[in-house]
Image (tube, rainbow, N blue to C red):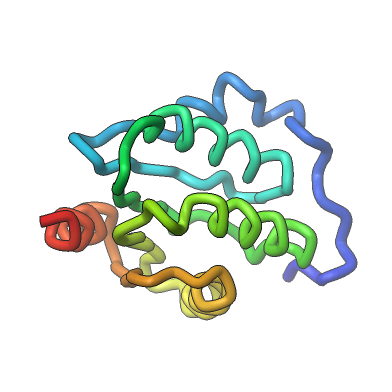
Length: 141
């Protein structure tokens, strides 16, 4: 179990480097992106993933994305705060976020809190990435 006071890993820890983080964000199709979170999130991993998402979505007035949270652990308070900041930065253009959480009730609860705190206008929870993609496609059309 991760405790709130547990220190985050360093920026890009030895097992997760910047180049690898960038490959975790991809364009699925026009205006739809996939972000595969790392198991142990830090403010630095959040920044790397969102920097890449913003690069890919540059110039788009609206888009949706799927976040694969099936393998993540509960993030610490600093990481949740940074995630909220980064989400607020794209919220204006974000049509929908499909959150693939599998059957992890803890991650679903944390993701729901972050989504509400970040002002997501439209989001949904799914068992699989494919279900989340379909929800995003529906929201975009």
